[in-house]
Image (cartoon, rainbow, N blue to C red):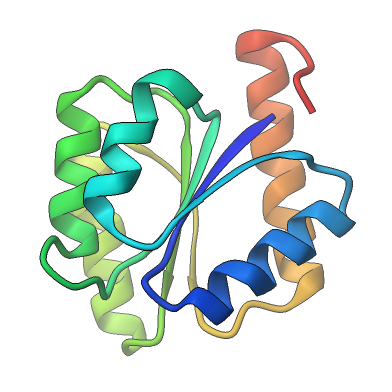
Length: 133
């Protein structure tokens, strides 16, 4: 499964990359801004995106709208340090754009919660593309 990480906090990107790698996933692309992530999308072809909502220049909602317009069919995990009401609203907006939300979680995300979400996303990816762990 190919995983695209998007977070403007470099420490959080490194932490997520290490956690995901430790769970056995090796196809990871990390981006610290939405424009870089959008540029990487066509060539990397992620099965899953883990996206922070609070980003400079282009926020997470704008990024997800752009991703939906590009026809992204993979899963999305939303991460945010914002309150749960904003997280839920973002989840609903993303689903209204036609995106598949695997989960919407507050930061920090525990290793166990991440493992569970990746297992759900990986099962969905296997059904769509075959195993690409």
